[in-house]
Image 1 (tube, rainbow over the protein chains, first blue to last red):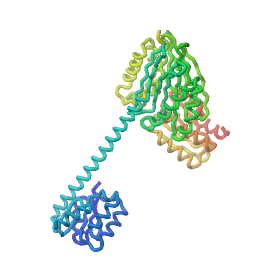
Image 2: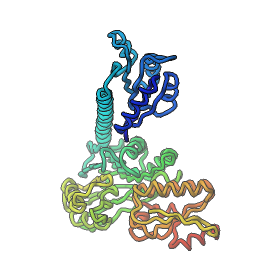
Image 3: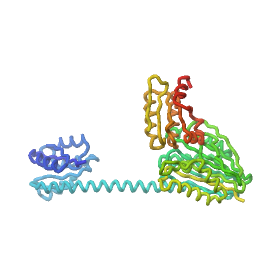
Image 4: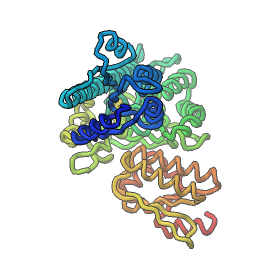
Length: 380
Length: 115
């Protein structure tokens, strides 16, 4: 788009000449014959990129116009070149004090006017680019901080709970994401294991995870039944989730070191896979719907053995729904098969194995969804 | 892609969606649903027979549409779920939240019969 220039000059022949020459250079030029109509024109329309302003005009002079421009944030940013017959130092100083960016004494050569116009416009463009860069750098720094905070708030603390190896990791598709995990010992000696996935990804989803995490941390600490945790947390989060049109899938499990069992409830979280020692892998089905659909939702509760060699893999949908370049998805059964074939691995090695299988499948295609994985493996 | 079909003699307007129903398509589908509701539609059918994948943001926009239909004493119905999509609904238990039909015709009939 061509730069827009306003010419304010009471001498109509000089005004027409400047307009003619600058239009020829490709600028979009508007003109005004006195200070007052110039101000009205400037206030009524999108600010131009540059103003050429005569000093001596009947009514409002150029200094007064320039001072008036400084009171409007949009117009104060527009560079002004004064055109004047006055060549005294004091006149120039008055002009700069009024807010001028440059000063040209009449009579002037058109070539010099064009050179000054072009130099000033280049400078404005440069400043805008720098401004945008600073803004984007600031946004990047803030996103990095947000990512650090989100990572820090995801904790896997086993404490003194014995009998099980736990590995948890979250890889957002962008710097921050809508997945979360939280593993911490309960006051009754059981280990609370939580994984959740807020619909969508990136910053909007991440903002919801903060509220979900707090709610689940509080409810898993206080309530001894995973099903009751889900029912209460859904009820408390329902209105907010409706407001922002989000859903959350949640898996809550309590591991009991004395019973060597895991008791869980599952609000639509997939895919969760269980492999009993020496047995075959199967999908652990949901025991109720995701959060944010009905304000009152009931959840079932199930118990699985978590003795030596028993394995529970809790993965967010970013694994089974990982896409390759041909737009094929990795697949739920495929993930079950991978876990089944590697069920004898230790938890940490299994995590690496699953990640490698997914990476091999997507083959360099950009990760499109958050990927979170918790692995529980019963020790000898 | 999402296109809206609305016949003066049909009980419900139908939005036909095709391909991957994910974050890229969600804004358009949401707009179509909003437009229909703004023009007074109480019953909306989402025809998913040409959809091969739905992600969580698509599930969220369907739930949003369903809630708003129910606020107006209407309903958002789904039809034509293919196997990969059906699996996602079953795994998340979302099949319990929606009225799901085999075809658009059976969904239209259900609306005419007062569901």
